[in-house]
Length: 401
Ligand SMILES: Nc1ncnc2c1ncn2[C@@H]1O[C@H](COP(=O)(O)OP(=O)(O)O)[C@@H](O)[C@H]1O
Ligand SMILES: O=C(OP(=O)(O)O)[C@H](O)COP(=O)(O)O
Image (cartoon, rainbow, N blue to C red; front, side, top):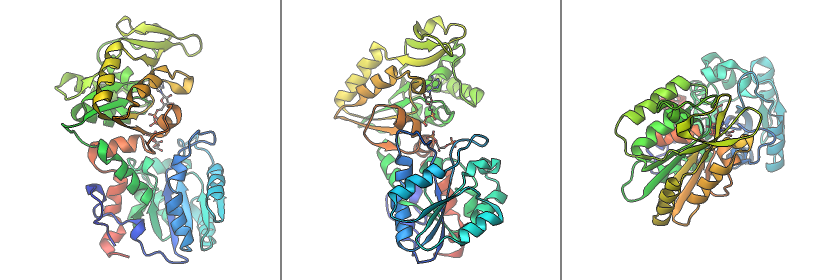
């Protein structure tokens, strides 16, 4: 059964797990986005899947769970995830580190009705991020039907969430439906409600997807993190040893493009930033003086002009999001981020935080999206590769199950 419910065009034609006829003994593969570490302060990325997993387990389904964490080469074992799920689900949960080949297939066959096995981290394979069809076929051998959770990886066309849909009928988990519904008020340009985007963090999507989009659709953009460093570089400032992310030249090209063309947004750049050497004391410098040799930008100083602008908007009413920590909070540089969140924490502002580190590092107990890059992708494009793959998964051709 395909869903025509909801208003989000991205969900039209997407089979939903809530509509799937579940039966005892069915073999399900659950694709999750458990990209957290054992020390993560927040567990939303795990807990968001509990209701869907519970639905499958209560129906007597046999569930093989696949998730990514970290990067190929340094990816962690997911035994800690299995421990968390065991404590939260009233069901037997096991961990099996091997996720491909005859050993994994045999373990999947032995999963009993109402039981869950967390298989090894999909990032142990280089082919996961490459969307390798051979790897996707191996993953598909772990079950007969796929439940697609893991909104945080919905912007990635990876083997475990997109490639696998070529081999098995896929159904969208409610966890992702909730994310799509959560994001609706932050989508698109609007004339009747001011909009503020704070972009930070270190991943290139914040610039390539986020900055490129909000400069044309939002009213006010406050850059931090690598987005700020890239913009300063694009304006010709010396940024010294500042972090420029994994795709610096592509990000620079986007920054130059948005600066060089007419755009809707007012870009609130700081006058001063905090800089620090890899080890040693931090200090505040004027942006126009450049970053001293051996130093990197680690935080922004919220200028009086930015404070006044955000205070004005917070009084009149606005929607706002923060995607990526504006400062290097992981190193303890939290002041700029704290000021921005404070300014946007007002009754008339709907503030949403996007992304794992953003939610974990910023002082905020309000609404969060589990996806950073995926939320920006969804806001920019109105869909994500993982949703597109579900519209074209085998269930489409073969009729409804
Ligand atoms: N100026 C900066 N230099 C280096 N790292 C930064 C800087 N600003 C923020 N960061 C770091 O970026 C990381 C998060 O980036 P990212 O993965 O893009 O965010 P999210 O997980 O919320 O999507 C955080 O650990 C944060 O401390
Ligand atoms: O943490 C994630 O994205 P996010 O940092 O943009 O929120 C996702 O799990 C995607 O991880 P990836 O960027 O390693 O593909």
